Amino acid sequence: MLYPELFKQLEAVRWSMDTDIPWERFDPALLSDEQAQTVKMNAITEWAALPATEMFLRDNRDDSDFSAFMSVWFFEEQKHSLVLMEYLRRFRPELVPTEDELHAVRFEFDPAPALETLMLHFCGEIRLNHWYRRAAEWHTEPVIKAIYETLARDEARHGGAYLRYMKRALARFGDEARTAFAKVGVLMASARRTAQALHPTNLHVNTKLFPNDTVQSRLPDPAWLEGWLDSQIRFDADWERRVVERILHNLGLLFGRSFANVQELNRYRKELGRGGAAEPQPA
Image (cartoon, rainbow, N blue to C red; front, side):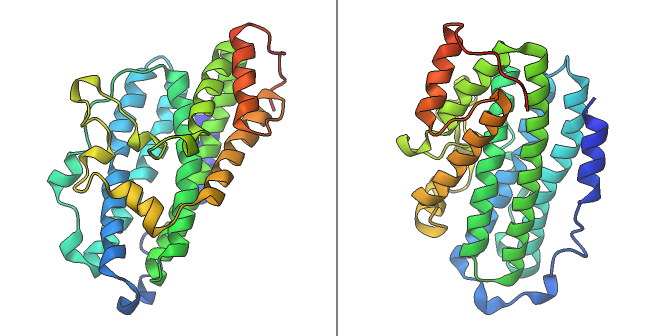
């Protein structure tokens, strides 16, 4: 089982909201209304770990190890929402999300293949790590900068934990897992070709609720994410390149071969479909 080791590793670096966030450094002159509003939107978005956890537990009923790890992931992701709301409670109380606004992003996700979902969230953690790093650079107020830096480190650790479960899946399922991971990897490393940000919170997940079936579509401002990325934190082509490189690098380690670009990964995916990909040695 991976859960006991991952629990120990994540417990060792867990931060305290009371003692590890420098609340005393708050400078009101360095927080604009525009910036504070983005904190609210991210607080609500992080609350969507609740329906994501419900999805994971439902779709992984046969995997008690991974389901147990969800207890750690869910706790830490909900803590992200909580620390952002605490920031607003202290310094912009009028912007604290209401319970109705939080509950709006709790809705049922359609069942999906567990391997594809695992890879999707692995890529999502990589992307969110980079989004939060960029957000920390964009913000000017010291406390929220420190919060986003803290959250970014958590997301990187979560990605590493998902990668451990992906390695386990390769040992258990072989080419079925490789095919699933390569398929989603091609999608998630192709964000520059799409009109929307490729992250689990911005993908359609319930056909009966379409088009109001993404987390972002259920925010108070459904168009917020694109504006935050494009006009505020300016998540440009260079930052997107970093995300793609991390996805390709980790898949290269996982599959035992290198991918210089998403086209090479796509060719590997097609080889798997024809049964022609060489058997890799898991890293």
